[in-house]
Image 1 (cartoon, helix red, strand yellow):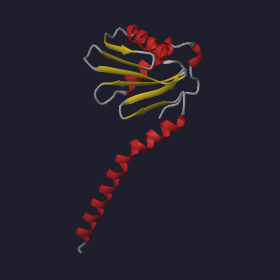
Image 2 (image 1 turned 45 degrees about the horizontal axis):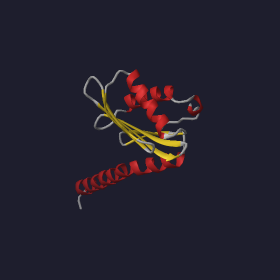
Image 3 (image 1 turned 60 degrees about the horizontal axis):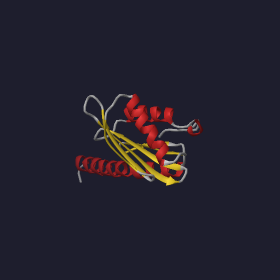
Image 4 (image 1 turned 90 degrees about the vertical axis):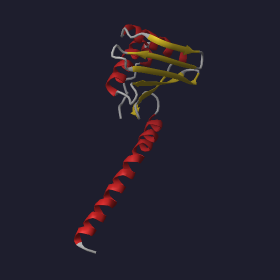
Length: 146
């Protein structure tokens, strides 16, 4: 083979390996996030997630209060003792989806997605606002980000 063909082959193999590695990064982040436990905030694939040490109805009330505080309209609000789904929308027509799922009688998983592909900054603003409306015992001082 000529030097040119060898160089192109090496480049092609390198690109394929980089693409394969990049496609697997989401799985690694999900595993790290799952292992991290309560109080850890994980942003993965457009969703901002946190396990909160409060029952679902308490977290749902904080979600509704925070959206009202942000003056964004609540388009849908479905909730029961185990789950809550809230849909809202910013003035620029960017949608907000917030899900709260019961993990136990005293813990819930909160998931926030802003926009089709996810907007981390706005998601974190909403999460910070939700924390203001949660009872003070859930204010996590050890929250970390990934």
